[in-house]
Each structure stands twice: as C-alpha cells, then as structure tokens.
Length: 206
Image (cartoon, rainbow, N blue to C red; front, side, top):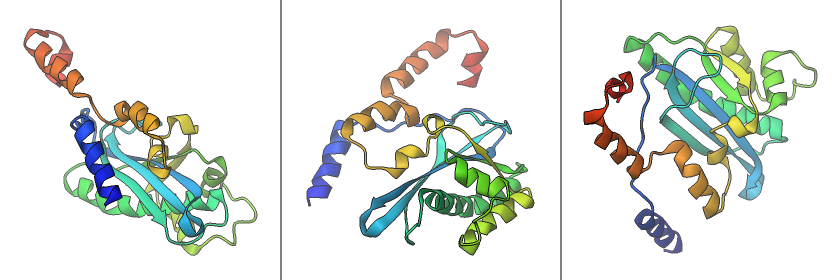
C-alpha cells in the first residue's frame, strides 16, 4: 500500500507524459547501460533506450520506442560482465524489432548500440585475453556483429540515455532528467500556438 500511495502521489503531481518523435529514416538505435550489484541478492540491473533515427555514426536523440529496466537474474562477476548482460538483454529485444521494421519497408543496417563501458566494448570489438570464462550468450553478441546485424560503439556515460533506467535516483534527479525524455505541456502548447503564424520549413515538420 505504501508503494501504491507513492505511485499515486507521483501521478497526481507530475505533468502529463508527452513524447515527440522526430522524422527519421526508421533505423533502430540503442543505448545500453548496467548498474553493478545495485539490487538485492547481489543482482545487477540492465537498462536500455531504444529509438529510431538515421544511419549516422552517433545517432541523435529521438522519442523512445522502448525503454528497458530489467534485473539480470544471474549474479554478474564484474561491472563489465553486467554491461555485457545488459547488451544481451537489449539486443535480444532488438531482433524482432529489426525484422518488423524490415517487413514494413525499412531495411536495417547493422543496429548501432552505444555503451559507456570501454572494457565491454573492447571484448565485443577486439580479441582480448581472459574472456573464455564469459557465458556463451555473451559470445552471441560478437557473432551478431560478425553477421553485420549489430554495430557497437563507445561514448561517455554523460551521453548515455540508458543510464537513467539502471539506478535508484532521488526525486531531484527525476525532475532534472524528465525533460531529457519527455516534452513539457507548456512547450507543446507553445508549438501549437505558433503553428498558424509560422512560415519556416519547421512549421511543415511539426
């Protein structure tokens, strides 16, 4: 009941959730992250931010088509292995989405997947020593890149939108991060009000 009241208080005090999707080439892109040993029983949490964009080296921000916040069942032995677990969870979810988009007439290049863990990125893109202990499912990730289904790249954690879904944050952080994923009602109303008088190409986009 305490958790239910907390949720109702949140729903009553927060603005209406609004997402704006920018026109794109319908190429699936993913940001992934993991928090190591942050859950009960020595578990870790996987996070993901799935969105559609153009086929750029570093896809730009767009409204999410899927957000993942998932406790990894197995106990991960390091932060790197937790990151690989998050990669596995998110890429498995991406496989049917890639197929669906292709059947809808949007052929998919290798799906760009961003991670902020340089060691995990090295495991997937190079051939480092000491990886024989990894679970077989993590080697599936390398196999998918070999088949040109996935493409991994690294960027710092401050540019990783999946980080938000992996940790327990204070209310102040939720308030500051809300504008990164949702659009405020005031901004949307301002756009609607300006539309009749706008004469720039942006008006046609909106």
